[in-house]
Amino acid sequence: MFGQNLEVQLSSARTEDTTVVWKNFHDSITLIVLSSEEGTSELRLERLLQMVFGAMVLLVGLEELTNIRNVERLKKELRASYRLVDSFLGDSERIGDLTQCVDCVVPPEVSLLQEALSGFAEAAGTAFGSLVVSGRVVAATESWWRLGTPEAVLLPWLVGSLPPQAARDYPVYLPHGSPTVPHRLLTLTLLPGLELCLLCGPRPPLSQLDPQLLDRWWQPVLDPLRTCVPLGPRALPAGFPLHVDVLGLLLLHLELKRCLFTVGPSGDQEPSPEQRRRLLRSFYSLVTATHFPPEPGTPEDKVEDAAQRAQVPRACYLVSGPEEPGTGWRLVALQLGPRRLLLLVSAQSPTHGLRSLATHTLHALTPLL
Image (cartoon, rainbow, N blue to C red; front, side):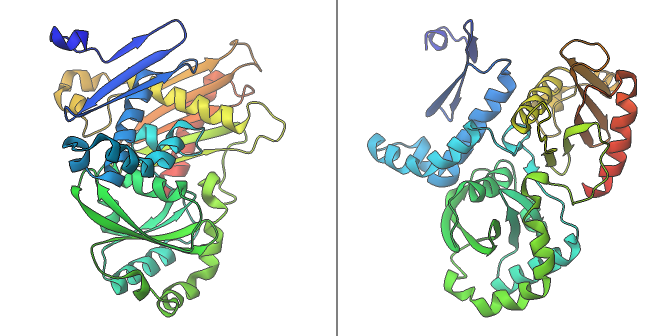
């Protein structure tokens, strides 16, 4: 506030062990985040604030946040967003909150599920449909994929954060597409952990989506649906050939705004799955802020000139811990066209082979995303 009076914009501050980032939205709401997590980047905290504000708009609407008539009433209404906001603050198995790309999984028989989903959505009278497992998108209609940021990320994340229910009729605002007029998010549980989501207007009523209509479209693809349920944290189909040294990976398609994020089961082996996810998240923040250009569509991207673009690095790596054979984990990032791959690799893997390993893995993953 002191800075504002002097027309100085201050966006972050650091103490010995804490980073503080704040952001004002629409000259109405100021959000402040504090993190004492070691190595937390400002990029991560800035994106967290964007997601939190997006969650508030999603469940309350922009009008309520920019034209505040009754603060106490707004506080009560915002309680609806607490569970979603809490899911951004915890140790999530997803990464869309940071990458601003939709977390996806790759089922073995995606074309069958796509066909059933498109047919069911048309029968229900909406163009927007998706299948969501553990907050990640399995398949979606073309219109659903065309949803803007941040709702494309927030809607499956919201479904993944809610307690299990057989069916829901949930009012939502679309922060990018319809921030002041609510839509309805209808969800139906097809199998435990696997939900069918439809985004629609006043029609159809939830009662119209009766068991006969569900059976007609989904009974024939029951086996492919069952194969989706265990995919939640794994993201990749069972038996996908990953090199034994790969401990975790993040694949981004920057034009489609979709990503695959998974870490291998560790057993007794260090690092634990939580540490692996944390290492990949930190590495993503590092390479995005310092090495690779901003993702397409961001304001920084538009002002970047062609000369700078020609000097963008294609790959980088980092050794965590002592750089001696058999010690420290390796992190490698590779950009090829619209795809960016980040790998966490075991200490046994020699550093001179990292780029080759990343290139081989990216080629294997390319047909999936």
